[in-house]
Length: 133
Image 1 (tube, rainbow, N blue to C red):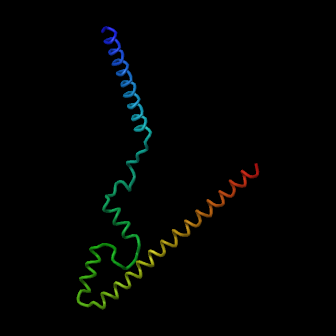
Image 2: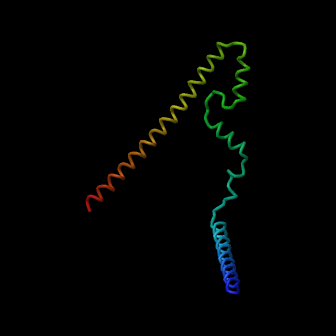
Image 3: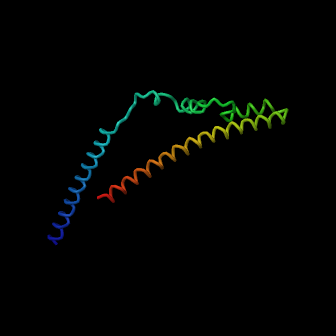
């Protein structure tokens, strides 16, 4: 019976020592992360509100088509009485949107093709280096 009690106490004390070491290591790791994380509070972009940053992104392109739902509804109210004019505006705005989308698509495709070409050239160099050895 005494042997059982002493083994139980030994197990509990070793468990507590293990928890203390784990807690200490956890505090050290968290402290290290906090001290080494780079936080820039002084950036101008962080000072701006989310609403202002979104508005800047929306206003970046200089297309004449509506950029927000409010502008679209305003445009719809202005041409409410003449469906022909409204259809004409919708066609023009759709054309501008597709033109803008196509420009972005072409730019992205060119960048992707360039990256693929660079990767292929690098792979060819790696293969030739391995074969040459």
